[in-house]
Length: 531
Image (tube, rainbow, N blue to C red; front, side):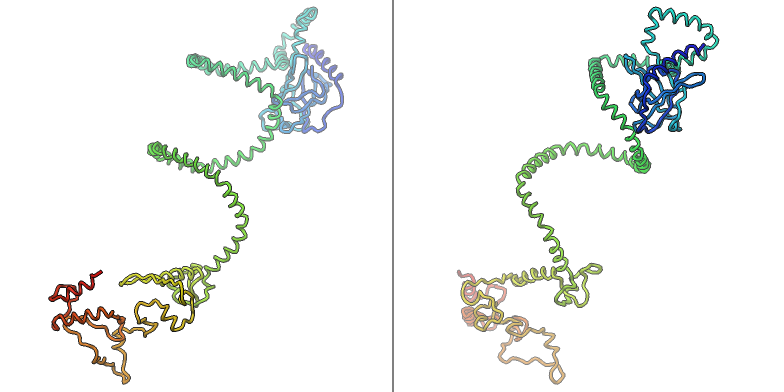
């Protein structure tokens, strides 16, 4: 009896296939599948083949099996990359695209590890055909409904003993029944969750009641969003077409990310151990952050001023940019000059004193025998010794040795001055210049240790013209000694002569300025303190 039901439907599908038969558009197909259907009503050659709701190919041919049970084999071609991996547990259903009778095949890729090979078949157990609503409406009109009732009456007796086969046919004929059964099965296994959901829904409704206006607004915005998405269905379709390629390229990145995450586990554990200390630091830093608000505000104001200054200095920056173009030309010779002037191997004068001031090895400027100062050291030595040369500072005083001449022979620099130029232009302090006009002084120990011509030490001679030192008088300087001879002005000599006549001969002139008899002291003070 089941054959009597299936044969008319198959004949209708075959007629539609012959009407729409044509050349197959299989050119450019990535993979081809055979889909076995109980009923191919509404399908045409070149119709859409969708996978996950996205167009992935087309139907290219139809064939009726030659043995019972009769089935329709639909050839489908995949033309979009990323959709050519239909699994062995994938399903294909015939669905209605519009109310005017357009139909297409919608497949689900499945999750099994094994793929259906090129040219493979999706069995009828994993397919279903839709029931056209227009046929149902036609059955409800007379005389079709009386004919349908007669068929049911005649077939009822035959089908009464085969309920399982009838159930399978009905489920395959309408996928909604199958999906409804699956939904009821899922709900039956989650009845406790549903019960809790219903109970919690009351609590949620009470909590949402004060915000119902916001919920209504959200519903309106969600409706607008859905409308916008509907107007951009083609763009979304292209996005989903490119999604498999994106996922394929993303897979290696995710693998690397997984490795990175595994390597970060020790770091995350260390951060976990440091988290309490970090929390304490943040609590302690909170007052500091509050106190720095004024400083940050001032810093922002300063940044505004600096920004204005930068805008004002745009011309200077442009000039620096223009000059920077010539910097590479200067950079190389400058580097060579600095390297050369700091190279001790290029010292032009052998000076052992450089060893005391040179850095130790392994410095590149370390001193080696036969070398002297580097050019850089000689430059700074000149500044140092020139400063000491014009600034004399000792226990007596500080003298700046600079003399300016405006006229005469002294302004010009002369390498070999004449005696007249030396006499007129020298800036000596005194008539004797040790080492220049007189011999270098020798120490007393050196003079005493000097041997005589006969080999014995020379005994110093008594100078008959030299006055003897009285008791308490200071020791007079020895001739040729280290202390220079001082010339006393004539007025001082006259004063000392008058003081010598006034004071008793046995009383020496006090050196500490203490008061003595007579007017000699008053006369000395008047001389020294007079304007």
